[in-house]
Length: 325
Ligand SMILES: Cc1cc2nc3c(=O)[nH]c(=O)nc-3n(C[C@H](O)[C@H](O)[C@H](O)COP(=O)(O)O)c2cc1C
Picture 1 (tube, rainbow, N blue to C red):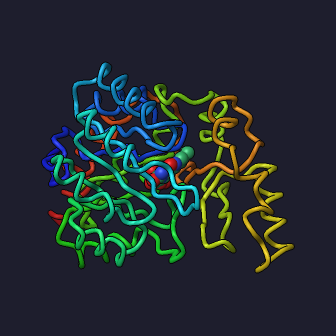
Picture 2 (cartoon, rainbow, N blue to C red):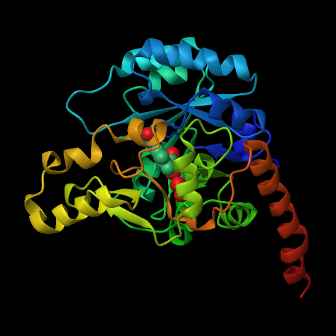
């Protein structure tokens, strides 16, 4: 399927695997790219810029297709060494960077000089317009239903995507709640040029995470996510578990007085415990409402081929029927 996004990134299908902490490693990124989508390595999962350089090289040994690296700008006092991260990306010959968190104005000149395409992930039209203004090539518009950080505006994709289409000149992909061919067709109908998937790619054969994580996503319904850290204005959509319910209890108890220190046990250092050890009650980890649409653990190729063939079929058969009426 050809769209502005496939043309921009030099990929076969308009399907992107979003950056995911402790999930976006070389194995998954290579599998997605080999299947014709755009696979993404998550920079901050690597402990040092040298580790990131090694991970990029490992991925490039597994695929000769374009890959992306996600650079998440965290609201933290001890900022990661972003200049060295950007250097590892440029030296590694990566052609696409997905930025998230704060807008990437500080690194844009370096990425543009290196000929790298930048797609910024954001949760509002105003942030998407800002990304366009500072020279991003595309944006990934993350609706309220998304796994991870949906922002504080709570606008779901049924509204956010057409709003983005009305305002933006650069192409955008729909992110959040994307599962299958129905998602792709609906997103295209609302003006997107492709889709970005997080949770769906965690439940794939190649995702380098513990089987317990994949099984938990398959077992979950659309009612099983929770919003945590709302009082800190750092809202995250996560899968519920014992630690998450404890965290929410603390939020209710402390209200406006809640600080990050109060919930440290439930949110800090959780990802390796969950993703590597399969310790599912150890804390809060991102998961989208789309879990309710995930019932299997396919290979990335079967998943992507299935999305495209279902989309083709919907366009040619179901939608064509309405057109004729
Ligand atoms: C386990 C997990 C970890 C994630 N980690 C990151 C991250 O480190 N940086 C980032 O920009 N987005 C992160 N995300 C968000 C995804 O890239 C994507 O935007 C989101 O999952 C889309 O919503 P969906 O889960 O409904 O598909 C994460 C999502 C999940 C499920």
